[in-house]
Length: 205
Image (cartoon, rainbow, N blue to C red):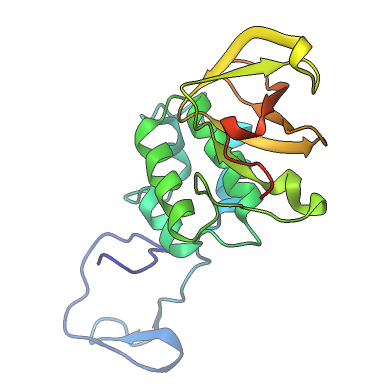
């Protein structure tokens, strides 16, 4: 099943039966088996559990997020059950930062592709148009080197920089083509600095 949302994984066999009303499976063995569908996984639930890390002490998985999916399913199932849209894009942005922090390249790329496919994350496209929504924007670094600034001024350039493909969250903008961003390095604390708008393709047009 390539396009369905998996909500439960059972083992065992059921032979010679059929579905009846109200999601019941009738068979000669058990005529009233109730196979009610469980709640579909959501990005908010999985992100909350994944961020907490509560399974990390007793379940080792590679990648780490695998422990937080329904057994036998992958990140693809989450994208089918709860695809990216306006209401959950902030949670997916946070999820993307965690995946990148953990070095989960495969699922990072899957999520980037999913966000791009619905126009939420796309280099060169304007993700948000108002200041009230700017904190929900996530962007790729589009320059080979995007130097970080301690303030929205060319005089306050630092020696640190981001590279092409890094993902940042847009926090605010200035009137002189600088954008304040937050970057989550692997194994470190979030970095909040300023970058030039052209380094993340976020200049007003």
